Length: 36
Length: 410
Image (cartoon, rainbow over all chains, first blue to last red):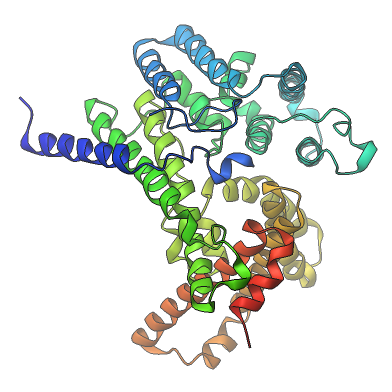
């Protein structure tokens, strides 16, 4: 049985990932510090 | 999510391929134990590396680097009690020199062995720091196998940009002796949230807002002064969102694999001076420079130099260490200036600490409220100073003066 707190956390995670999928900038990919 | 990187010899952390490798790494690290786990991790690390090392000369230089540093460490471990203490200084200088030469083939012209055969080694500055840590700590760890060293050097979640883990801690994580604090099922959701937070910081916020920072502004000469100031002050936030986003993603992934990697940030915008800033920003880098450059040199000063000149010499070491942090990023005039500015601010802070009594008498911020106000003023001015030091880092040299003229039109 999943607790209410865990269920809320899973829902929040799903919303975060949906936000990323919707608003992710399509041109980027590498990081500033990747070149060092 | 398709891979978004334009360079074919890369693998973005927002790609399906990286996601699959991450899942594979988690499953293998969580289900296997002992030698099987280490061999499986090696396979993951090499698979990730294969996306970045496509040319034979790069593979050869990397293999040579791994072989030479591993051999050196084993040689050091076998003769630990018979070697002079200065040896690590020589090793560090040699490895830093290798870093500068391999990264900038034009440095020293034809005398640079990479001048005629330039190579691009992925995450080379991080590799060099890990190798320095390995050679330093080799006697502290029983495992001196090539497998352990390669897995440490090329650990795929942190290969691209750190955080820079120490050899002893990494070896404990690889053998399973060091695990995340809550390493049961409770580790999963916080780690997934961390990855999601990192994706939001980097791919939603930093990348979408990049054009508002000074690096993303077009036609800087014609931009109005208030907008230029906003771009300057916002650039530092963007840099944080980019790098902290990356760190959240890789630390979340590593935690799911059972590797509690060292944290890289501690609310850097609250720093009230440059010393505090480097204790809060890119912590794994500043801790490495502190432990492997600043502390050994300071020990020499304390043991050998007359007491009267110790403060000046140690302050000079502060300056040198900070310049080194600057050129660690790249051997360009911009990063040299970045390091010099940070070093000068650190020297000023040491002088202020030394003259604490005189400073206290002069400061108008007295009493609890005054001290609190003074602290926030220091936080604000540190932030503005840091934003100015971003200019030589983030902009090409021919843009510095036009931007400064635009920022300070009087």
